[in-house]
Image 1 (cartoon, one colour):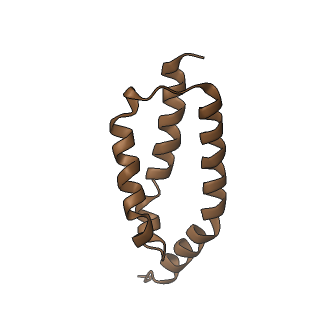
Image 2: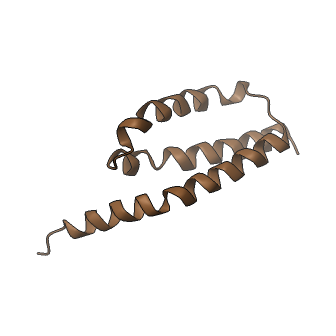
Length: 89
């Protein structure tokens, strides 16, 4: 697989996690994850300089999947709380 394709797969993993920043900021984990999101953003800016192989990308994709599964309950609780605070008009 080309390095461009591997880089794209890695970028997709990082973007998937970064898209959760707003939701996670509203949880108890928010303050702890602030620095981690900052680091991920820095990595995204330098991603073109990163040389990776397919095994690394597969490992990162797997870790991203596990991370999302572990956050499912936390994010569902946040979404449920947000729904409960909406006012009907």
